[in-house]
Length: 220
Image: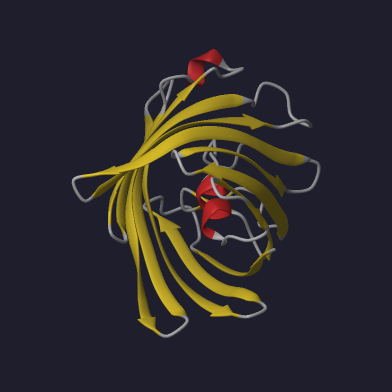
């Protein structure tokens, strides 16, 4: 899907889906996790990815003790935009006190023409802090291939069941190297019935208003 900044990317979609929590069915070597949520907007790269419409999101993830994982995630979009469907897989492991994650995501937009594309994503983490690089490829619009997103963020439990998280990032879109910086700050309250969140997001584009998004998510 495209926003007023020409192109958006899940984020937050896959990242958000994986951070909603774990649940469901497990075996000795593998685990199946489900998540669902409703949000007043869909934040992506500091902008709205749903034309300021509320969205319903949800997904399912399968992870193996070996570090291999697979999953899918779906979000509604703005009026007339249909849905975003993400299919992904990857491998995560730890070495020398660091966490490494290399994955591939394919973004499918059934109601939109020439919007589908893939993303190679690499993340390095240390405790609650992470750095991520995303590289676009396999795009219906070939000119978009080679676009890059860089993100750095982390989270901290400031009191029991309340966490604070932040992220700053930089977007470089092809073919004309359109660039901008974005950042976000969020609070999440965890309860036995799900998580309640409040997120502030903004970019360095003066023409765009900051976003304040409330949400509720649950793992089952």
